[in-house]
Length: 197
Image (tube, rainbow, N blue to C red; front, side):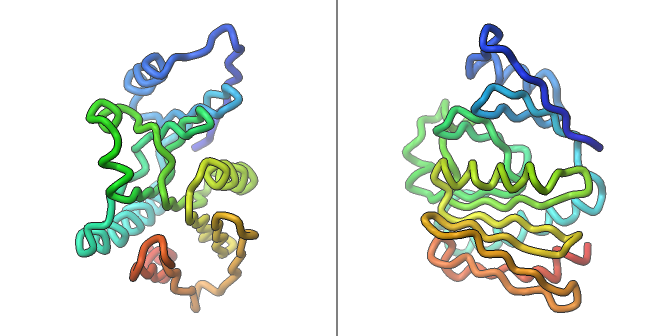
């Protein structure tokens, strides 16, 4: 499974509706569009990455069902960021008030909003350097807290607004608990569940 990038010349330029229709017409492929106009074609994930993504989404959703503080989105949700880029993080969460401020039409298509929290999971088909660049892009677009989880290294990179990236190297036998901090009050992710699919 590979990721391909196509450079779209400015003359081609896609409107929001054209990009939406392009994504619909090419399911199950996941498409992203960088702010520079690069069309990124991503293959579906493999089995272990799929299990890990499902566990991440489940854990966050269970916390959110109890707190009712926002909305949780899976990896198939595409967001239009303030920069104009279209991105679909592996897991995303948006505060309820911010989600409710969108119109019904904005909620149905690709929501024009940067999530408050995201998780990206480094799978075998991903480039770690490209994922790190993507994390900075999320940070530049307003995400409050973001985790890049790399089960292969293993490491976790924590991105926070206005702070340097924190990198946690750990042993698979002794993975850390990650706190949702003030963004996701009371949420704790046990990485042991994610690392052992």
